[in-house]
Length: 413
Image (cartoon, rainbow, N blue to C red):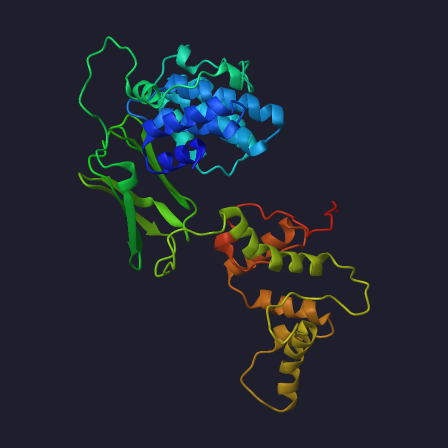
């Protein structure tokens, strides 16, 4: 096994001192390998005590190498390690700027939400003109990339001693702060009832005053310090279903953090805690097919011989709604001819002779309650005829927008 492979194994095993040693040896052989600097930067951040200045130096070398080669994924990872190192060095303005560059290249990076939350907490506690909030970084730093011949290959003992020795400081060392449970031993479990989803994160000694918690309708995130000096970040994004954030709580206990999440749809049982489909894709998938077909039917050329086509989910094919409407308008007349009594058909007679489809919706409108009528009128008028809803509780929330299907364009009347 070569030194890089040994470094990766040590990083996975949380042996960060050994990871620094092996990646230093690997860099001595190949000083142009972007991944070696990224991984050693990670190890420097997580080693006890952390060496954030060294982590920043490696991240900026990796970023410079990656940008010269145009390696997008490596640029993102190097910029991410750079932002984290800057945060740890209390350069919060620079850190936020670097996270913004990461977001521009990969807005789906899951750790961004946690770091944005932590930065907000730090920055809002600063006074005006605090130098910690200043932005001095460039997107791509001006650093000199070492060549292999310039890198002195250290002995294993020298590297380990360098990794383990703390930086010089005049402050007296204090006792271990933060969570005492090792990061690789922290775990989570969940269960559900008809009304709630309960998530437990098992970690001893989470400090209430230093834990950052964010609960949203489709996600949760928490970050807290470990006794090693690094932070532990945990997130679930997205949930299988939506939750009611106003009635959801998080409780920090001595042995765990417990989230009690109120389901938005009581009685809905989740098969899994986390969904594999991103939130926007899931909502888009549920609505696109039906809404596009409705819009196409409304905006289709009314002069075609075959008449409009209506959307359907029926396995037996589309239903002839023209015939359904015609049958409904003719039924009262046929019943009267048969001499049946007990029906007031004066309203129905008003629609005879009209277009069957229009007659059908006119009957629907005439028999509806006031809220349904309001919903029908508002949705149809505001959407320019591209939507017709009978649900006032939904329509009443705001304007119903015109959204023509793909390939069509809505034009003003």
